Length: 190
Image 1 (tube, one colour):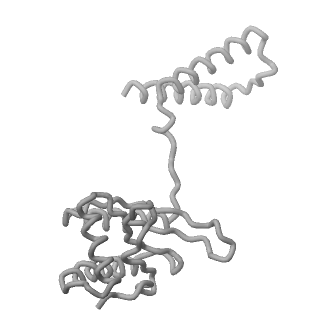
Image 2: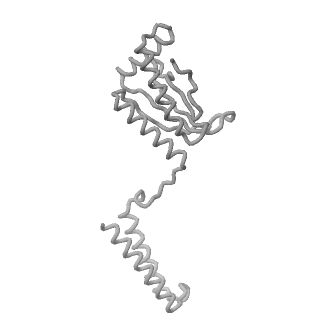
Image 3: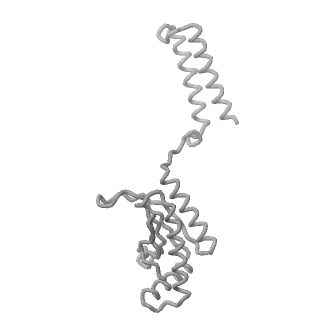
């Protein structure tokens, strides 16, 4: 409230100065040296007080492209969905524009962070790759893939991706599901 009061005082000073100048036009150069000095000191003090008491982030407006808003919302929704099922995942939206052969796009990465869940998904993936997966292993991975594929339909553009990954012992991302607006990129397990 105090910050708002200082801003209002500053605005009042500026308005009264502009009203005075419109009623009696006076150029800064026409003021005496003493009047110029007083005017500049008062303006500097008012601005300094306002800037000191206002956090710059309070007045900053962040402009986010529409694609990033949509993809951030999708990431938050997926994170909520998977964490609701105790899979303890994190979600991040990354800009990808390092390769000249690939169109710049965003990737939503849903990463399994909790050790027990990561180990369980890793065992299911390894069993699937080895051809020894049980029906419950296949169902668990299939549900993840379908959820990622459904969420990818809401992506802003066709180049954006959603990935569901876990990190292996070498800290490399192992992809369980990858999808874009057109569908699943990794084949569904069923």
